[in-house]
Image 1: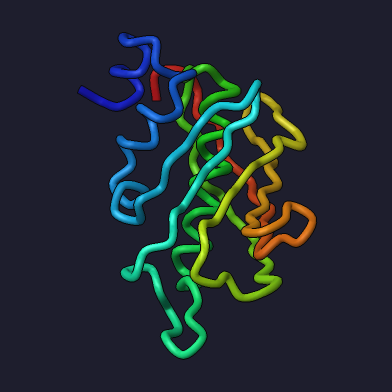
Image 2: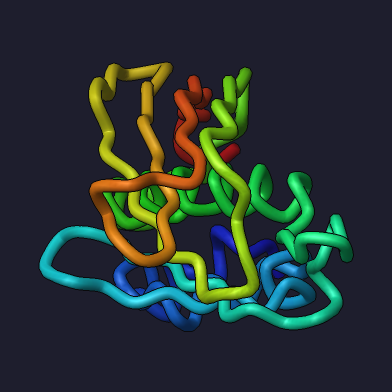
Length: 147
């Protein structure tokens, strides 16, 4: 059964912890998610296997980029109440500082949602939300129902 059909059947579009467990790469990274009001908060606890630079040590840029994209996608899925799965058109990432050996937190804001395309701004931080580690702006295709 497709993920979208399973989500509709179970009414799980609002259950972000259940949903993030269905994303294989998020599961590999060890990502978690929780819902705070209408905002999806993603959490990536630090683990040795996500180190990119052992000299610092710092979280691998690919893991940071993936977390940004997954956070944006999770927020869109939550906002759409599992009516449709968004598909990434493009994403632009700004790496602002090194992500050290600490837990990463993420949130996304849907800045515009049309019938076909949504624009999402995402940010990750560690110690303080005022000091983001990375930000991203992505455009996502909102496929018609049944796709």
